[in-house]
Amino acid sequence: MRVFTTLMLILFFLTASAQKKSALVSGQVIDENENPLAKVSVIILGKQTGVLTNDSGFFSIMVPSAKTIAIIFSYTGYAETQKNFYLSDKEEEKVTIHLRRNGKLLETVVVKDDRERKELGLTKINPKNALVLPSTVGGIEGLIKILVGSNNELTSQYSVRGGNYDENLIYINDFEIYRPYLVRNGQQEGLSFINPEMAKNVSFYNGGFQAKYGDKMSSVLDIQYKKPKTFGGSAYISFLEQGMHLEGTAKKGRLTYLVGVRTKSNRNLLSSQETTGSYIPSSTDVQGYITYKLSEKWQLEMLGNFSKTSFTFIPQSAQKTTSVFSPLFTANLGLDIIFEGQERDGY
Image: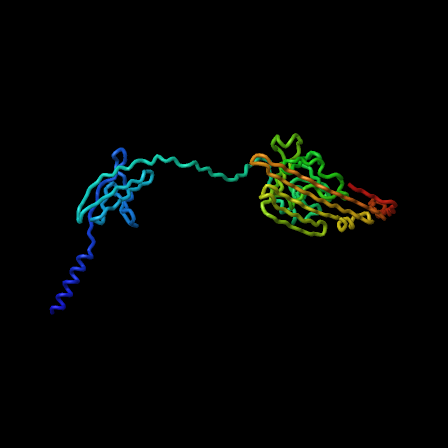
């Protein structure tokens, strides 16, 4: 019995000593104009939990007694305030806390984004479609001929709104390209100046274009070549044309280069012409675009092109036929033509 009583006394004293002593802090939080502030955060320094003031700005929080504590009062748009307390067991203290507006200025935030400007008469063309276009011409011009018109499927020339073929402006990275085709005939025509593998953006104006493009009246073809950021390349092959390109950077990104090589031959296509003979067309093109960044405002750009086209035609024969219809008779007339000599073009 004595042992049981002793154990109960020890347990009572341990429980009493284990109870934490606490005090109460209450009050109101107001602003500079004596207006109550609701939803102010009231947290004991070093603790994870706290309370919020009510709609009238009042709060009440239990704190440990017999030691110094700090209570943090914080509210959006106001300077954080700290107040220290040292309270006895079961002591209550009422306070009034004044919060001042935070005078810190926020840094200006600028949000930028690219936005395409809608212009009358402007058509955006995806240069990747030029590589898969089922056309004898191909290239960027082959896509444009779908939008406008041309009376010869073997040529890259196009006419806009009834204008002349020479009234179409062509720009590549703000460089105006004069006479992009040296020979203006379908069979003899080789590669055009524009390399679709190197193009990034293609804009076609069929009228109403800006004055910066000049005074020709038909159209403007504005092409932007790539400015690569990493090393890369591509290659393609078809029955009429083959090509490849390389791109990359150097000098820690200050120097960029873009090089493309193309070859084209219409021999398989011309073999089915009305005039039989030996058609030997070939065209080779090497093009490069280099940029060097001198500073944030200055940059050097160089666009170069080497093109060689040859066309040899040795005609053999041709046959012309026609039909004659009349009330008296009907006849089919034919003419066989035998050729001598040959045609050689090169540029």
